[in-house]
Image: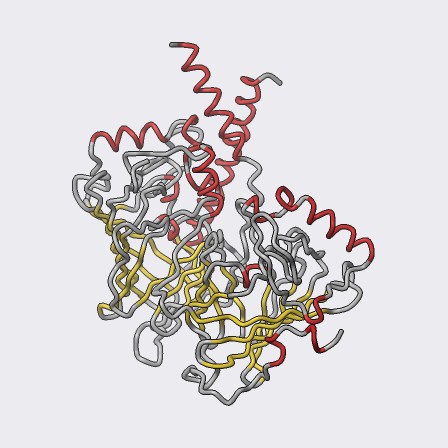
Length: 295
Length: 251
């Protein structure tokens, strides 16, 4: 198989994988909309029978108890924050998770919109950090199609992601890390506003993408997340992103999170099992070689 | 084995009578940031210095790891090839117990039903269930499956379902997927946890053996940070390309 044929082969395999993913996502969404409680999207492990809504669970101190095994009903946010329907053969439809601005469009600066469009080409697939199994960052970790466990030990909210990364959110009113300390997952600090957990994240290193199509986030981003429990098993998750390097104004996404009773997180050895990355690199290198030839 | 070979940690008794922090339900409270000061991550046994490896006192009871003959030979081979063969050099998950004594801090979080350990090294974590639940059957984990229970003031964790791909240290000490661990965490005082592990693997060793070392509370640390092993490796070798418009610091 010559290189061009190999590339074509990899593209077809990738297309089939994406179609399968889109199909599974659609299945998950269908469950999420129609099934009510217990029909966990994404996981399907140990599903509980449907039941009526239970009130918010509470800690001994009266604060909401958010702990448990959760899956996000991401509506394809991992493939685009804006709404897109059957854009092409390769990319799943996305529901659109932007609730502000009202038109659901990301308020990109022109350079960033151009960058986003460029990232969504086959030769840029290799550049998505999660293709390398690097951590998804904030807020992307919250809507990748992979479950997570929320723990609520004294003074903290801790999130453990199945794809091997974590967030720890102290609730003691401390200050953020010094500006020169930058992290893939940023530095998160939380507080309660009534029954809503408000989490402010700074100190991001700007290396993470917001999804596979490459929605842009920079080191200047500040993310304010709001976890609002609406019953014992459902949280409305909102994240407001302010990033003056990339956007013209702040915007807000909204995604439902659903708890699954008795769900247990497993272990996804992404990097250890990452056999596909070189295909994406081949596509990129082939493209670059072609560009060089045309010059 | 003679008493002379016992590391200092073994001579201490499990309960010292000192005041230790406790949770609302009366259990010892391990929550906080911890790290070893031992040289166990280089070599579990007494060892001389080599390039990139300081000399160190061992943490193995009796200083002897009871390998079967074939396994002793395999260990020597691992040691000779350690620069290439150590799974950590590929940024693979270190497994248990190795993650516990690497020279990176970790944060323990404690609820009634769980002990969570979040590690600075590549954002690995362990979630240990203390609610009496059983683990899934027939799945192998890089970080094992940990189920804990309280024996008085000691947290006892059975760790099973390991894969055969992790090592115990940089010196090539190894195990198979038949590895079973019993970890014992006992607070000696508010800032010290005695960490002991009984190691059993009938495919590799002739009998169970034991390591022990103290974990020290990192009192001057506000939070643990990150060392994303693979991301740093790929940034350094150019496989992950730099992006001056979004990155901090600018490349």
